[in-house]
Length: 419
Image 1: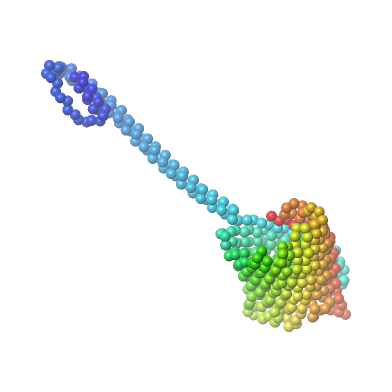
Image 2: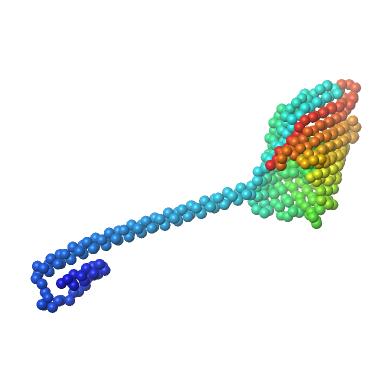
């Protein structure tokens, strides 16, 4: 009988639901009462075993649910991490492909200006000027396409006005060093190019810019580049509105400015340029009488230790686009600088221009400056400067007609900060 019970128990433990037990020999049979007790005991053991099996199954199911939940959580965390990595990579790419730049020209000076007709003018006195503060953002889409936005802020103590403009706003396609195409407002071919060799824009504009015979930037289509062995040639062409960057308004036609430069050896350049158009003054209802023209020549040398240059311009009807009268003007500028010690340079410049060779022979402008520059740190320059300007012009009042001149002397500190 005991062997039967063991077999039943084993079968129950193995999950066997039915089996057959061979009848024992007659001589080994026990009484019905003993057999019933053993059966009841066996049933109790089977019930206990079944309960343990059910409990084990429940634990297994619970563990399976936990495993599923854990797997889902891991998948969700992995997806979140992947998305975060993608966002981080996109942000990193945006930061790496976007650059912020800035430049400020400022001065703290004393001005003494005298008018031969009226005496000392209101522009005289001590004051701080922030003549320019450029803040620019460049973004590179890929190896060809990029864009730029540069704002232009300035404050002048002489007129007490603060102005804010968009100086540059363009999309650029750089297909090659010899073919850089821009759409929008950007540097014109001549003035910024001359500034690179002059090197002291924060002290004074170059001659065509100072006398307002050109724009440093304008709205339109621009193409330029460098070519030849060792990039010995450079060029720039601009088809623009003609108003300058402060006025993107439309006109009846377009103006053209161009430049060609030759670099015979490192640090030296010989360049010629020209401008032709109506300076944005001709509209559908206003016809231009004359066409404004300007020609430019520059020979310059520029290195870290030494700069020397000469610029000449000639203009025709620049200020007579809408008048019947015609006129001519021309002028030249000479400049130089030399490093005399670490971070210290001496510089000087002389300009002489005849602004109305036909209508007013007395209309002349002479300007010169001299100073010492100190490189405070990378991106920060200071200069002690003395400037002198004498502007002559014929006037009809008071009678009789006479030559009126305005003399301006300015002494102070000029600075440039850039990053």
